[in-house]
Every structure is written in structure tokens, then in C-alpha cells.
Amino acid sequence: MSKVQDLEADEVIDYCANEKCGKEIHIGQPVTKFGHELLCSGKCLIERIGGVTIIAGKEVKPGYERNR
Ligand SMILES: [Zn+2]
Image 1 (cartoon, rainbow, N blue to C red):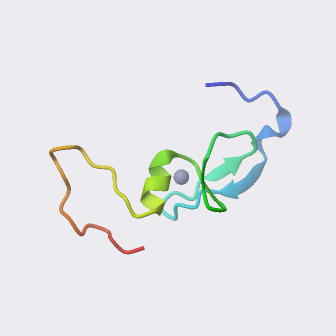
Image 2 (cartoon, rainbow, N blue to C red):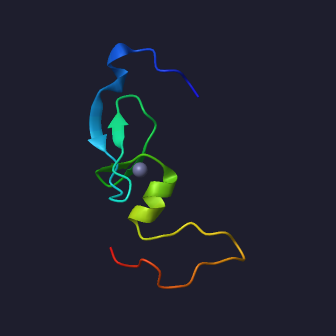
Image 3 (cartoon, protein in one colour):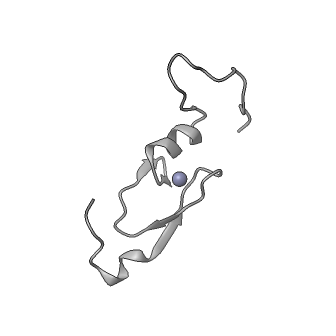
């Protein structure tokens, strides 16, 4: 979307709270906040809270990766 113009904008301030992702979170980046944690995308938030993204009508088998 918008281009990063600030030279300091790529400073890493945190990492995605989704352990499977763990991407760097940079200043100025739009992120999802969950409590005090930051997640790089809505998908990561869903995974962080234990949800999974599936294709409707083609659900993956229940119980897949339910460990936290
Ligand atoms: Zn992430």
C-alpha cells in the first residue's frame, strides 16, 4: 500500500506473537494487536488464538495442531 518513506521506518520494534511466524514488526507497519502482543496479520492473530483458516466446505480434519 503506502510506501515507506522514513529512513528509520524499518527499525524492528517487535516480533509477530504467532510463534509459527515470528516475523519482524517494523515501525509504521500496520499490525494487529492482541492484548500487549503484536501480530503481523489477521491470519497470525487467528493462529495465535487457536483458530485455523480453512477452505469452506473442505475442512481439514478436526484436531489438527490443537496444541498451543
Ligand atoms: Zn505473523
